[in-house]
Image 1 (cartoon, rainbow, N blue to C red):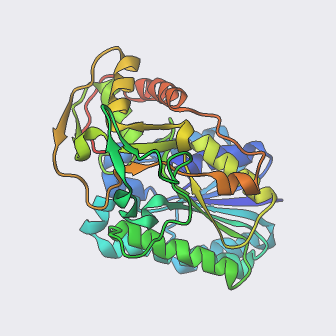
Image 2 (cartoon, one colour; image 1 turned 90 degrees about the vertical axis):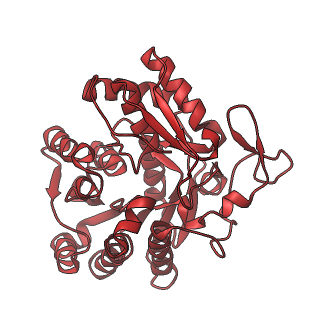
Length: 364
């Protein structure tokens, strides 16, 4: 028996990982207590995703409704499977800038302490298992906002003569002397700890610093998951609010399948203490205005949206990931989803899940 442990297993990346590795013949143990519902309300609950996983993979998936902050529970779970654990994929998190300010203790306990609990459980009971952590580009704080940006009709764009222009931002960007948000700090703490368990203890660990992770399985909410939430509002006809930067802020977007496929490549040839910027890069990015226009074309009607001058604290004006470091280590991996394909697939899922209903105002 080879077991893959996935935390946040009912979330976007967790659920994708469950299906991916179950199809590869692994037994998958998912850890998820639907904290997303606590963070963002009933509409953001991942209960529907958990139920779908348990139906589809009933012979290879076991769900554990535990909290990663519970050290004893995590240690007991890993002790139960021991050396049978072939891989740990840690996606569970509190993922919102704004929510972190409401409750810094919970934010840090989930993101930082929870990650430490999982690293220690892995070191104690499954030290040969690669440990993959879904980090975030927010570990760089607002440093990207100091890049020389040029305003165009629909987006901010990086000056053509800048080294990051052709391929995006690489891992050389500093994490120091920048405004992170409390969420950025808690994720940076976890990110550094994952690296340290690789370098100090020799665990085979990797931090995937994602841009916007997206896909049809996302339970998008006002405070997190902008592309999924935008499409949800487009489908339901509910007004959406864009915060700051004239709606021209740029995000790269990586489909959950492409990210989990990158996990698979790392798993087959793991390394210790690695860091990878991971996103849609130049192949899959859009501004808020461009995303609104694309959503309108898919639904056949213009979106109803409003604009607020107040941007979110620590929010990026322009982010495109340079994925060449990962591609150099794993040349057989490549992106398979562009923006049009992502949104088309998401539109189909949201239309089926929500139809024409009501949702709250959105955010960038």
